[in-house]
Image (tube, rainbow, N blue to C red; front, side, top):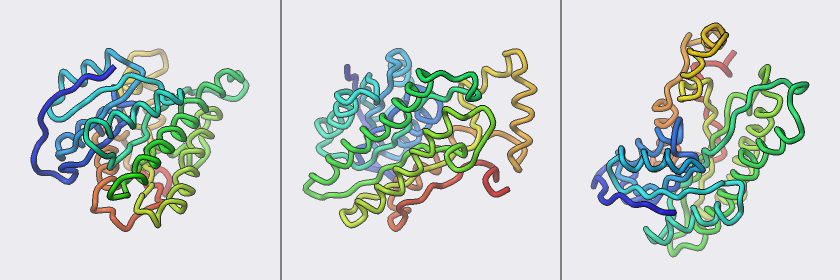
Length: 262
């Protein structure tokens, strides 16, 4: 399913760029799609959440297309990239953001939990990067920028993230290997590693038993004494996606209020 909004700002740091943002119906993905549109990009926003994408299309002005699909499904990942190429003639930027974030210790987790997270966060990132790189390399003007969403949990250990964290180590590792593999063909691959961000899911913790206490404890772990905002992550993604980072590849950029500096 594809829906389209017409029109795009003439200026901006991504003016004229064709971009795919996965997991764009909410949270960081939505913030990235919104910022990219403001910067003049044409955006294909993808998610498994069809109603969330419908709301996105209704609320955001600019050149926005939506594709409903699951990044862990080969044919869906291929279709997301193809939508950008078919509509805009090329692909300039992929933001591989789609993921699931279960919080559980290993004694609580099942093999099915592990397989689900690795399918979405690991296989899904692999597939979207694969098809994006194939498209970028085959263009008349080869090249492009890929930004993967890793996490502080993909750079350091945390309690309760024995299932989610290893998938983000995959994101960080895939970023570095692809960066080296494709640098000589003009394709840059970087990642951001957010700390705890006030997405819709995190905001709901305020109303859940033990949630306020949990959030207060998490805030103290970040030296800046607060959680991040999705727009702050989107700003870092924009930098890495844009020509401002033209000599930057293979970087995993923390956006974490100092968490990893400790």
